[in-house]
Amino acid sequence: MDNQGHDKYQKAFADLEVISSTDGSFLGSSLQAQQQREHMKTKLLLELAQVNLRLKSAKTRVTIRESNGCLQLRATLPIKPGDKDTRGTGRKQYNITLNIPANFDGLRTAEEEAYELGKLIARKTFEWNDKYLGNEANKKDLLTIKELLEKFEAEYFKSHKRTTKSEHTFFYYFSRVKRYTNADDLATADNFINAIEKIDKEWAKYNAARAISVFCQTFKIEINLTNHSKMPESNSRNIPTDQEILTGFYRFEEYLNHRGKQVNQNLKDSWKLWRWAYGMLAVFGLRPRELFINPNIDWWLSNENIDLTWKVHKDCKTGEREALPLYKDWVDEFDLRNPHYLEMLVAAINKKDKNNHAEITALIQRVSWWFRKIGLDFKPYDLRHAWAIRAHILGIPIKAAADNLGHSVQIHTKTYQRWFSLDMRKLAINQALSKRNEVEGIKDENLLLKLENERLKLELEKLRMEMVYKSN
Image (tube, rainbow, N blue to C red; front, side, top):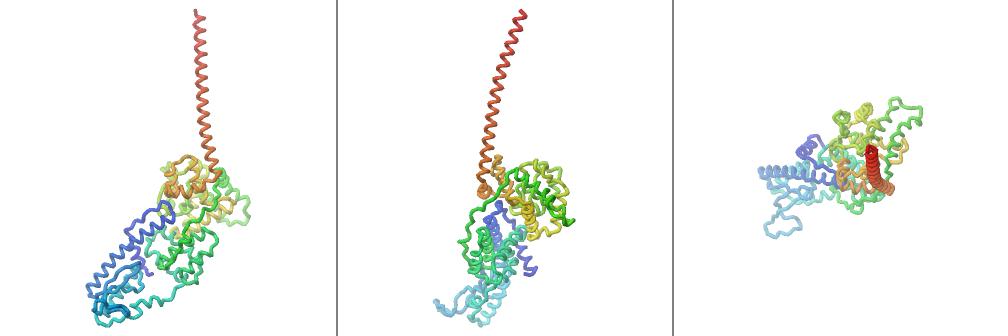
Protein backbone atom coordinates (compact mmCIF):
# COMPACT_ATOMS: atom_id res chain seq x y z
CA MET A 1 0.00 0.00 0.00
CA ASP A 2 1.38 3.42 -0.94
CA ASN A 3 1.97 6.07 1.70
CA GLN A 4 -0.99 8.10 0.48
CA GLY A 5 -3.30 5.12 0.97
CA HIS A 6 -1.81 4.38 4.36
CA ASP A 7 -2.24 8.00 5.45
CA LYS A 8 -5.88 8.00 4.40
CA TYR A 9 -6.74 5.08 6.65
CA GLN A 10 -4.83 6.44 9.64
CA LYS A 11 -6.27 9.94 9.15
CA ALA A 12 -9.70 8.36 9.42
CA PHE A 13 -8.68 7.14 12.89
CA ALA A 14 -7.30 10.51 13.99
CA ASP A 15 -10.45 11.47 15.91
CA LEU A 16 -10.89 8.04 17.51
CA GLU A 17 -9.90 7.47 21.13
CA VAL A 18 -9.62 3.69 21.41
CA ILE A 19 -11.46 2.37 24.45
CA SER A 20 -9.20 1.19 27.25
CA SER A 21 -9.01 -2.54 27.84
CA THR A 22 -8.62 -3.11 31.58
CA ASP A 23 -8.21 -6.86 31.41
CA GLY A 24 -5.81 -7.45 28.52
CA SER A 25 -7.86 -10.49 27.57
CA PHE A 26 -8.83 -11.61 24.09
CA LEU A 27 -12.33 -10.28 24.85
CA GLY A 28 -10.88 -6.85 25.66
CA SER A 29 -8.88 -6.86 22.41
CA SER A 30 -11.97 -7.96 20.48
CA LEU A 31 -14.02 -5.06 21.86
CA GLN A 32 -11.30 -2.62 20.81
CA ALA A 33 -11.18 -4.15 17.33
CA GLN A 34 -14.97 -3.96 17.03
CA GLN A 35 -14.94 -0.29 18.03
CA GLN A 36 -12.34 0.47 15.37
CA ARG A 37 -14.18 -1.48 12.66
CA GLU A 38 -17.39 0.42 13.42
CA HIS A 39 -15.52 3.74 13.40
CA MET A 40 -13.94 2.94 10.03
CA LYS A 41 -17.29 1.80 8.62
CA THR A 42 -18.86 5.13 9.65
CA LYS A 43 -16.03 7.02 7.92
CA LEU A 44 -16.40 4.84 4.83
CA LEU A 45 -20.15 5.44 4.62
CA LEU A 46 -19.56 9.19 4.82
CA GLU A 47 -17.06 8.92 1.98
CA LEU A 48 -19.48 6.67 0.09
CA ALA A 49 -22.16 9.34 0.32
CA GLN A 50 -19.76 11.84 -1.27
CA VAL A 51 -18.93 9.41 -4.07
CA ASN A 52 -22.62 8.82 -4.79
CA LEU A 53 -23.18 12.58 -4.97
CA ARG A 54 -20.43 12.80 -7.58
CA LEU A 55 -21.95 9.93 -9.54
CA LYS A 56 -25.36 11.61 -9.40
CA SER A 57 -23.93 14.93 -10.57
CA ALA A 58 -22.29 13.13 -13.48
CA LYS A 59 -25.66 11.49 -14.32
CA THR A 60 -24.12 8.01 -14.43
CA ARG A 61 -27.37 6.35 -13.29
CA VAL A 62 -25.22 4.10 -11.09
CA THR A 63 -24.84 4.17 -7.31
CA ILE A 64 -22.59 2.27 -4.92
CA ARG A 65 -23.79 0.49 -1.76
CA GLU A 66 -22.08 -1.44 1.01
CA SER A 67 -23.22 -4.96 1.89
CA ASN A 68 -21.54 -7.48 4.21
CA GLY A 69 -18.11 -5.95 3.89
CA CYS A 70 -18.25 -5.58 0.10
CA LEU A 71 -19.17 -2.77 -2.28
CA GLN A 72 -21.84 -3.29 -4.93
CA LEU A 73 -22.88 -1.31 -8.01
CA ARG A 74 -26.60 -0.59 -8.14
CA ALA A 75 -28.23 0.20 -11.49
CA THR A 76 -31.26 -0.49 -13.66
CA LEU A 77 -30.12 -2.89 -16.39
CA PRO A 78 -31.50 -5.21 -19.06
CA ILE A 79 -32.99 -8.41 -17.65
CA LYS A 80 -30.25 -10.83 -16.60
CA PRO A 81 -30.12 -14.13 -18.53
CA GLY A 82 -32.35 -16.66 -16.77
CA ASP A 83 -34.22 -13.98 -14.80
CA LYS A 84 -37.95 -13.29 -15.21
CA ASP A 85 -39.27 -10.00 -16.59
CA THR A 86 -42.18 -9.76 -14.15
CA ARG A 87 -43.05 -6.15 -15.06
CA GLY A 88 -42.63 -6.58 -18.80
CA THR A 89 -40.31 -3.57 -19.10
CA GLY A 90 -37.26 -5.51 -20.21
CA ARG A 91 -35.30 -3.85 -17.41
CA LYS A 92 -34.79 -4.38 -13.71
CA GLN A 93 -32.73 -2.92 -10.85
CA TYR A 94 -29.75 -5.08 -9.90
CA ASN A 95 -26.98 -5.05 -7.31
CA ILE A 96 -23.76 -6.12 -8.99
CA THR A 97 -21.07 -7.60 -6.79
CA LEU A 98 -17.57 -7.29 -8.25
CA ASN A 99 -15.80 -8.67 -5.17
CA ILE A 100 -14.66 -5.18 -4.17
CA PRO A 101 -13.84 -4.86 -0.42
CA ALA A 102 -15.59 -2.14 1.56
CA ASN A 103 -12.62 0.09 2.33
CA PHE A 104 -11.15 3.29 0.91
CA ASP A 105 -9.12 1.49 -1.76
CA GLY A 106 -12.17 -0.54 -2.75
CA LEU A 107 -14.28 2.61 -2.89
CA ARG A 108 -11.88 4.17 -5.35
CA THR A 109 -12.08 1.05 -7.52
CA ALA A 110 -15.88 0.93 -7.21
CA GLU A 111 -16.16 4.56 -8.32
CA GLU A 112 -14.10 3.81 -11.43
CA GLU A 113 -16.28 0.78 -12.16
CA ALA A 114 -19.43 2.87 -11.66
CA TYR A 115 -18.31 5.41 -14.27
CA GLU A 116 -17.46 2.59 -16.69
CA LEU A 117 -20.85 0.95 -16.17
CA GLY A 118 -22.53 4.34 -16.55
CA LYS A 119 -20.92 4.81 -19.96
CA LEU A 120 -22.18 1.38 -21.10
CA ILE A 121 -25.70 2.27 -19.94
CA ALA A 122 -25.61 5.68 -21.66
CA ARG A 123 -24.40 4.14 -24.92
CA LYS A 124 -26.88 1.27 -24.57
CA THR A 125 -24.02 -1.20 -25.08
CA PHE A 126 -24.26 -2.99 -21.73
CA GLU A 127 -24.14 -6.79 -21.91
CA TRP A 128 -24.24 -9.40 -19.15
CA ASN A 129 -20.72 -10.86 -19.35
CA ASP A 130 -18.69 -12.89 -16.82
CA LYS A 131 -17.55 -9.71 -15.08
CA TYR A 132 -21.06 -8.49 -14.27
CA LEU A 133 -22.45 -11.97 -13.67
CA GLY A 134 -19.80 -12.47 -10.99
CA ASN A 135 -18.13 -15.38 -12.76
CA GLU A 136 -14.72 -13.69 -12.95
CA ALA A 137 -14.48 -13.50 -9.17
CA ASN A 138 -15.17 -17.23 -8.95
CA LYS A 139 -12.45 -17.95 -11.48
CA LYS A 140 -9.76 -16.10 -9.52
CA ASP A 141 -6.91 -18.29 -8.33
CA LEU A 142 -6.57 -18.71 -4.58
CA LEU A 143 -3.51 -17.11 -3.00
CA THR A 144 -1.05 -18.90 -0.75
CA ILE A 145 -0.71 -18.11 2.93
CA LYS A 146 2.69 -16.60 2.20
CA GLU A 147 1.19 -14.21 -0.36
CA LEU A 148 -1.47 -13.08 2.09
CA LEU A 149 1.07 -12.71 4.92
CA GLU A 150 2.91 -10.21 2.72
CA LYS A 151 -0.30 -8.17 2.52
CA PHE A 152 -1.42 -8.77 6.09
CA GLU A 153 0.01 -5.64 7.71
CA ALA A 154 -1.39 -3.27 5.09
CA GLU A 155 -4.84 -4.88 5.24
CA TYR A 156 -4.91 -5.15 9.03
CA PHE A 157 -4.26 -1.43 9.53
CA LYS A 158 -7.06 -0.51 7.19
CA SER A 159 -9.38 -1.35 10.08
CA HIS A 160 -7.11 -0.69 13.09
CA LYS A 161 -5.61 2.54 14.37
CA ARG A 162 -1.83 2.25 14.22
CA THR A 163 -0.31 2.68 17.68
CA THR A 164 2.54 1.02 19.53
CA LYS A 165 -0.02 -1.19 21.23
CA SER A 166 -1.79 -2.21 18.01
CA GLU A 167 1.54 -2.94 16.34
CA HIS A 168 2.39 -5.33 19.18
CA THR A 169 -1.01 -6.99 18.74
CA PHE A 170 -0.51 -7.30 14.99
CA PHE A 171 2.94 -8.82 15.48
CA TYR A 172 1.38 -11.37 17.85
CA TYR A 173 -1.10 -12.44 15.17
CA PHE A 174 1.42 -12.32 12.31
CA SER A 175 4.08 -14.37 14.11
CA ARG A 176 1.64 -17.11 15.12
CA VAL A 177 0.08 -17.46 11.68
CA LYS A 178 3.56 -17.66 10.20
CA ARG A 179 4.78 -20.12 12.86
CA TYR A 180 1.89 -22.57 12.79
CA THR A 181 0.97 -22.70 9.10
CA ASN A 182 2.70 -23.85 5.93
CA ALA A 183 3.46 -20.74 3.91
CA ASP A 184 3.10 -22.58 0.59
CA ASP A 185 -0.41 -23.89 1.37
CA LEU A 186 -3.37 -22.19 -0.25
CA ALA A 187 -5.21 -19.88 2.14
CA THR A 188 -8.29 -22.05 2.55
CA ALA A 189 -10.31 -22.80 5.67
CA ASP A 190 -9.44 -26.50 5.47
CA ASN A 191 -5.71 -25.81 5.37
CA PHE A 192 -5.92 -23.46 8.35
CA ILE A 193 -7.95 -25.95 10.40
CA ASN A 194 -5.54 -28.78 9.52
CA ALA A 195 -2.64 -26.60 10.65
CA ILE A 196 -4.31 -25.93 14.00
CA GLU A 197 -5.12 -29.60 14.57
CA LYS A 198 -1.47 -30.58 14.05
CA ILE A 199 -0.40 -28.51 17.07
CA ASP A 200 0.20 -30.67 20.15
CA LYS A 201 0.05 -28.20 23.02
CA GLU A 202 -3.42 -26.96 23.89
CA TRP A 203 -2.46 -23.38 24.67
CA ALA A 204 -0.41 -23.10 21.47
CA LYS A 205 -3.39 -24.49 19.54
CA TYR A 206 -5.73 -21.96 21.18
CA ASN A 207 -3.41 -19.01 20.47
CA ALA A 208 -2.91 -20.14 16.87
CA ALA A 209 -6.68 -20.31 16.40
CA ARG A 210 -7.04 -16.77 17.75
CA ALA A 211 -4.46 -15.44 15.30
CA ILE A 212 -5.83 -17.40 12.34
CA SER A 213 -9.34 -16.17 13.13
CA VAL A 214 -8.16 -12.54 12.83
CA PHE A 215 -6.14 -13.38 9.70
CA CYS A 216 -9.16 -14.96 7.99
CA GLN A 217 -11.43 -12.12 9.04
CA THR A 218 -9.00 -9.63 7.50
CA PHE A 219 -9.05 -11.42 4.13
CA LYS A 220 -12.76 -12.38 4.21
CA ILE A 221 -12.00 -16.10 4.38
CA GLU A 222 -14.97 -17.99 5.80
CA ILE A 223 -13.85 -20.36 8.53
CA ASN A 224 -15.48 -22.04 11.52
CA LEU A 225 -13.14 -22.26 14.51
CA THR A 226 -15.81 -22.99 17.12
CA ASN A 227 -14.11 -26.25 18.11
CA HIS A 228 -10.88 -24.36 18.87
CA SER A 229 -12.26 -21.25 20.57
CA LYS A 230 -12.53 -22.66 24.09
CA MET A 231 -9.76 -21.59 26.44
CA PRO A 232 -7.76 -24.63 27.66
CA GLU A 233 -7.51 -25.63 31.28
CA SER A 234 -4.88 -23.68 33.15
CA ASN A 235 -1.27 -24.76 32.96
CA SER A 236 0.37 -25.57 36.26
CA ARG A 237 2.55 -22.79 37.61
CA ASN A 238 5.26 -22.63 40.19
CA ILE A 239 4.33 -19.55 42.18
CA PRO A 240 7.33 -18.52 44.30
CA THR A 241 7.04 -17.69 47.98
CA ASP A 242 8.51 -14.46 49.34
CA GLN A 243 11.59 -16.35 50.53
CA GLU A 244 12.05 -17.98 47.12
CA ILE A 245 11.80 -14.55 45.48
CA LEU A 246 14.51 -13.17 47.77
CA THR A 247 16.70 -16.22 47.14
CA GLY A 248 16.15 -15.86 43.39
CA PHE A 249 17.29 -12.25 43.44
CA TYR A 250 20.66 -13.17 44.95
CA ARG A 251 21.16 -16.01 42.48
CA PHE A 252 21.97 -13.41 39.82
CA GLU A 253 25.13 -12.41 41.67
CA GLU A 254 25.97 -16.04 42.42
CA TYR A 255 26.02 -16.53 38.66
CA LEU A 256 29.30 -14.58 38.61
CA ASN A 257 31.06 -17.39 40.46
CA HIS A 258 29.93 -20.03 37.99
CA ARG A 259 30.18 -18.39 34.58
CA GLY A 260 33.12 -19.13 32.34
CA LYS A 261 36.22 -16.97 32.10
CA GLN A 262 35.64 -16.11 28.44
CA VAL A 263 33.28 -13.21 29.00
CA ASN A 264 32.73 -10.34 26.60
CA GLN A 265 33.98 -7.31 28.53
CA ASN A 266 31.17 -5.19 27.10
CA LEU A 267 28.61 -7.60 28.54
CA LYS A 268 30.22 -8.71 31.79
CA ASP A 269 27.97 -6.49 33.94
CA SER A 270 24.79 -6.95 31.88
CA TRP A 271 23.41 -9.34 34.51
CA LYS A 272 22.77 -6.31 36.74
CA LEU A 273 20.13 -5.00 34.34
CA TRP A 274 18.27 -8.30 34.27
CA ARG A 275 18.49 -8.58 38.08
CA TRP A 276 16.97 -5.09 38.25
CA ALA A 277 14.17 -6.25 35.93
CA TYR A 278 13.61 -9.27 38.18
CA GLY A 279 13.30 -7.02 41.23
CA MET A 280 10.86 -4.67 39.50
CA LEU A 281 8.62 -7.54 38.42
CA ALA A 282 8.61 -8.90 41.97
CA VAL A 283 7.93 -5.56 43.66
CA PHE A 284 5.22 -4.24 41.31
CA GLY A 285 3.71 -7.34 39.69
CA LEU A 286 4.38 -5.78 36.29
CA ARG A 287 4.11 -7.40 32.88
CA PRO A 288 7.70 -7.60 31.53
CA ARG A 289 6.73 -5.38 28.59
CA GLU A 290 5.79 -2.59 31.01
CA LEU A 291 9.46 -2.13 31.91
CA PHE A 292 10.59 -1.46 28.35
CA ILE A 293 7.84 0.57 26.65
CA ASN A 294 8.63 4.26 27.21
CA PRO A 295 9.66 3.93 30.88
CA ASN A 296 9.33 7.17 32.86
CA ILE A 297 12.75 6.98 34.49
CA ASP A 298 12.79 10.63 35.58
CA TRP A 299 9.67 10.03 37.66
CA TRP A 300 11.00 6.77 39.10
CA LEU A 301 14.14 8.51 40.38
CA SER A 302 12.39 11.74 41.35
CA ASN A 303 12.36 12.90 44.96
CA GLU A 304 8.69 13.76 44.44
CA ASN A 305 7.94 10.07 43.98
CA ILE A 306 7.37 9.56 47.68
CA ASP A 307 5.00 6.61 47.16
CA LEU A 308 7.59 4.86 44.98
CA THR A 309 5.19 4.29 42.08
CA TRP A 310 6.19 3.00 38.64
CA LYS A 311 4.35 4.76 35.83
CA VAL A 312 3.18 2.33 33.15
CA HIS A 313 2.97 4.02 29.73
CA LYS A 314 -0.31 4.39 27.86
CA ASP A 315 1.02 2.30 24.96
CA CYS A 316 1.19 -0.79 27.15
CA LYS A 317 -1.37 -3.60 27.05
CA THR A 318 -4.01 -2.12 29.35
CA GLY A 319 -3.12 1.56 29.12
CA GLU A 320 -1.45 3.85 31.63
CA ARG A 321 -1.47 3.45 35.39
CA GLU A 322 0.71 4.04 38.45
CA ALA A 323 1.72 0.77 40.06
CA LEU A 324 2.39 0.72 43.80
CA PRO A 325 4.89 -1.60 45.50
CA LEU A 326 3.50 -4.17 47.91
CA TYR A 327 6.72 -4.31 49.95
CA LYS A 328 8.41 -0.92 49.89
CA ASP A 329 11.43 -2.31 51.71
CA TRP A 330 12.16 -4.53 48.70
CA VAL A 331 12.82 -1.37 46.65
CA ASP A 332 15.83 -0.70 48.88
CA GLU A 333 16.65 -4.38 49.35
CA PHE A 334 16.94 -4.81 45.58
CA ASP A 335 18.52 -1.36 45.04
CA LEU A 336 15.94 -0.63 42.34
CA ARG A 337 16.50 3.15 42.26
CA ASN A 338 20.20 2.87 41.55
CA PRO A 339 20.78 5.29 38.62
CA HIS A 340 23.40 2.96 37.14
CA TYR A 341 20.79 0.26 36.49
CA LEU A 342 18.44 2.80 34.91
CA GLU A 343 21.26 3.95 32.64
CA MET A 344 21.67 0.33 31.56
CA LEU A 345 17.93 0.18 30.86
CA VAL A 346 18.12 3.29 28.67
CA ALA A 347 21.09 1.85 26.80
CA ALA A 348 19.30 -1.45 26.19
CA ILE A 349 16.21 0.32 24.86
CA ASN A 350 18.19 2.77 22.74
CA LYS A 351 20.01 -0.09 21.06
CA LYS A 352 16.61 -1.14 19.84
CA ASP A 353 13.84 0.67 18.09
CA LYS A 354 11.64 1.34 21.12
CA ASN A 355 8.57 1.44 18.89
CA ASN A 356 9.41 -1.82 17.15
CA HIS A 357 7.30 -4.67 18.46
CA ALA A 358 9.85 -7.32 17.47
CA GLU A 359 12.70 -5.57 19.31
CA ILE A 360 10.65 -5.03 22.46
CA THR A 361 9.71 -8.71 22.35
CA ALA A 362 13.42 -9.57 22.10
CA LEU A 363 14.07 -7.69 25.36
CA ILE A 364 11.22 -9.53 27.06
CA GLN A 365 12.58 -12.85 25.85
CA ARG A 366 15.94 -11.86 27.30
CA VAL A 367 14.33 -11.55 30.74
CA SER A 368 12.99 -15.11 30.43
CA TRP A 369 16.39 -16.31 29.21
CA TRP A 370 18.06 -14.98 32.37
CA PHE A 371 15.51 -16.74 34.58
CA ARG A 372 16.55 -20.01 32.93
CA LYS A 373 20.24 -19.04 32.91
CA ILE A 374 20.47 -18.76 36.69
CA GLY A 375 18.33 -21.84 37.24
CA LEU A 376 15.07 -20.40 38.60
CA ASP A 377 12.12 -22.80 38.82
CA PHE A 378 9.60 -20.09 37.94
CA LYS A 379 9.00 -17.68 35.08
CA PRO A 380 8.71 -13.87 34.88
CA TYR A 381 4.91 -13.94 34.83
CA ASP A 382 4.92 -16.10 37.96
CA LEU A 383 6.20 -13.07 39.87
CA ARG A 384 3.06 -11.24 38.76
CA HIS A 385 0.87 -14.08 40.03
CA ALA A 386 2.85 -14.13 43.27
CA TRP A 387 2.12 -10.41 43.71
CA ALA A 388 -1.62 -11.05 43.28
CA ILE A 389 -1.63 -13.90 45.78
CA ARG A 390 0.47 -11.97 48.27
CA ALA A 391 -1.97 -9.06 48.03
CA HIS A 392 -4.82 -11.45 48.78
CA ILE A 393 -3.02 -12.89 51.80
CA LEU A 394 -2.31 -9.40 53.11
CA GLY A 395 -6.00 -8.54 52.86
CA ILE A 396 -5.66 -5.98 50.04
CA PRO A 397 -9.15 -5.36 48.55
CA ILE A 398 -9.56 -7.14 45.22
CA LYS A 399 -10.40 -3.90 43.36
CA ALA A 400 -7.22 -2.22 44.62
CA ALA A 401 -5.08 -5.23 43.71
CA ALA A 402 -6.69 -5.53 40.27
CA ASP A 403 -6.18 -1.83 39.52
CA ASN A 404 -2.54 -2.07 40.55
CA LEU A 405 -1.96 -4.96 38.15
CA GLY A 406 -3.84 -3.22 35.36
CA HIS A 407 -6.85 -5.44 34.77
CA SER A 408 -10.47 -5.91 35.79
CA VAL A 409 -11.73 -7.48 39.00
CA GLN A 410 -13.21 -10.28 36.88
CA ILE A 411 -9.87 -11.16 35.32
CA HIS A 412 -8.12 -10.79 38.67
CA THR A 413 -10.48 -13.27 40.27
CA LYS A 414 -10.64 -15.67 37.30
CA THR A 415 -7.02 -15.65 36.21
CA TYR A 416 -4.97 -15.07 39.33
CA GLN A 417 -6.93 -16.72 42.09
CA ARG A 418 -6.77 -20.02 40.21
CA TRP A 419 -3.08 -20.20 41.16
CA PHE A 420 -3.97 -20.09 44.83
CA SER A 421 -2.39 -23.50 45.48
CA LEU A 422 -2.84 -25.70 48.53
CA ASP A 423 0.43 -24.42 49.97
CA MET A 424 -0.65 -20.82 49.43
CA ARG A 425 -4.03 -21.52 51.03
CA LYS A 426 -2.27 -23.11 54.00
CA LEU A 427 -0.06 -20.04 54.27
CA ALA A 428 -3.07 -17.73 54.13
CA ILE A 429 -4.97 -19.75 56.77
CA ASN A 430 -1.92 -20.02 59.02
CA GLN A 431 -1.31 -16.29 58.77
CA ALA A 432 -4.95 -15.61 59.59
CA LEU A 433 -4.77 -17.99 62.56
CA SER A 434 -1.50 -16.41 63.60
CA LYS A 435 -3.15 -12.99 63.59
CA ARG A 436 -6.06 -14.41 65.56
CA ASN A 437 -3.69 -16.01 68.08
CA GLU A 438 -1.83 -12.74 68.29
CA VAL A 439 -5.06 -10.93 69.09
CA GLU A 440 -5.99 -13.57 71.66
CA GLY A 441 -2.52 -13.26 73.14
CA ILE A 442 -2.90 -9.52 73.45
CA LYS A 443 -6.26 -10.01 75.15
CA ASP A 444 -4.70 -12.46 77.64
CA GLU A 445 -1.83 -10.10 78.21
CA ASN A 446 -4.24 -7.25 78.85
CA LEU A 447 -6.13 -9.40 81.36
CA LEU A 448 -2.91 -10.26 83.19
CA LEU A 449 -1.96 -6.60 83.23
CA LYS A 450 -5.34 -5.73 84.69
CA LEU A 451 -4.94 -8.38 87.39
CA GLU A 452 -1.44 -7.15 88.13
CA ASN A 453 -2.77 -3.62 88.31
CA GLU A 454 -5.41 -4.68 90.84
CA ARG A 455 -2.77 -6.52 92.87
CA LEU A 456 -0.57 -3.44 92.91
CA LYS A 457 -3.52 -1.32 94.00
CA LEU A 458 -4.12 -3.68 96.92
CA GLU A 459 -0.43 -3.61 97.82
CA LEU A 460 -0.47 0.18 97.69
CA GLU A 461 -3.58 0.35 99.86
CA LYS A 462 -2.00 -2.08 102.33
CA LEU A 463 1.16 0.06 102.55
CA ARG A 464 -0.92 3.18 103.03
CA MET A 465 -2.84 1.60 105.90
CA GLU A 466 0.40 0.46 107.54
CA MET A 467 1.77 3.99 107.29
CA VAL A 468 -1.40 5.38 108.92
CA TYR A 469 -1.20 2.75 111.72
CA LYS A 470 2.44 3.58 112.49
CA SER A 471 1.79 7.30 112.49
CA ASN A 472 -0.90 6.78 115.16
